[in-house]
Length: 91
Image (cartoon, rainbow, N blue to C red; front, side, top):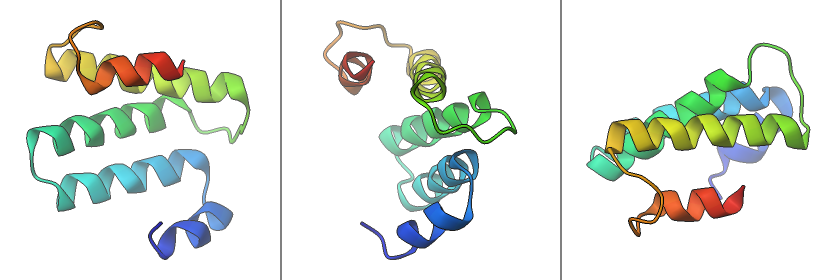
């Protein structure tokens, strides 16, 4: 785990944390996979809205938004043996 992560978790909202991780992915992994992960995390962050809620329903909403973004940008559906299948299984 990166050294900065535990500190961020106590000082930032889940939305801000996801957005920050998305930026790190975008800048450190300039690949197709990195781009998909970054966009998925950003979509998950945006889905959380401005109100801080750390509950399971918020997590599901964020995960669904992230998966939908990855599917759109990657032009992939479930069952195609990609990491999207693992994300969908997490729901």
